[in-house]
Length: 351
Image (cartoon, rainbow, N blue to C red; front, top):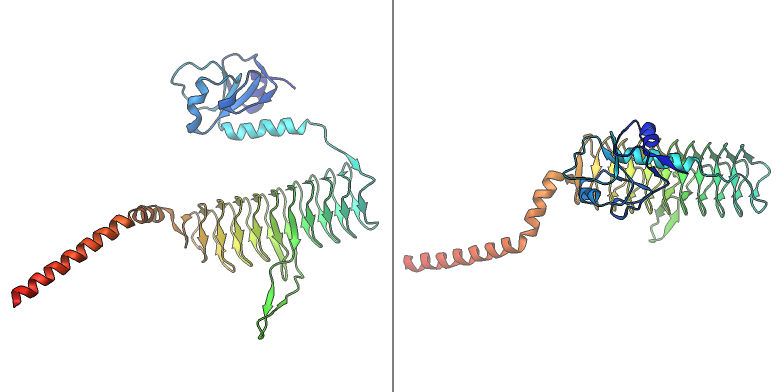
């Protein structure tokens, strides 16, 4: 499908600067722009590319002021990145959607399936499980007994959803996600062995949650592991039993949350962050990459980094000191040598 600059601007409530009749039918990166495509500029690091890009249309923020001539047509909007997302969602929504149940799927007789669903080959749906309207389940997905899947969900190939899991509406589970596997519960015995503690709880995923490839969310020992509305979980994230992730909290790849920890709403967790178990994190906190969080954080809205997690301004000052440790060590050794020399002189003068 083709869209003119004016059509795009009208949809995004933006303003065209340049040829409002020029049309595009694809998107491209600003540094690799091609004629007939739309690109965007939101990160100032890429500003230099806008003057040479061959893309036909560039989305920019309204406060963008060019330093020299730009060949492309500009569409000025309030937030270029946010508007790009709206455009891509529009394009995705008009693509043909798969509908129908494959004869190679295995669906229990007690399961219920809504209208306009897609269930691919080799999908297994267990006893007393329900699947909502307009939900797509791709091949080789396993959904166990007594689960509930909401409306308008997208479940990609190879997802595993264990018993009694509840998933809300408009959720996306990417390839290889595992929901409701046993939590890591083992009781130590006097002889040094471990007895498995049965995990009898479940997982609840509320509406508008996206969980990306190969992330794992363990079922609760007792009660529920809960992912609140709007949370976004990246690839390879591990969430342990009885954890609660707050509304609109985002977690980047390879982060992990130990058992019974509660993370507040609208938190930002960068890659490879680790949270200890049985702690509480207040709303709106941000954690830099590879931060270790051993204790509860009660104040909302902070930015933390390092191990143990400390306020980022302190971490940055400490990082400068750390880089200078070899020089500081040499200074200490030199001072120690001079003190020893002075001490010897003083002792000699006393004699």
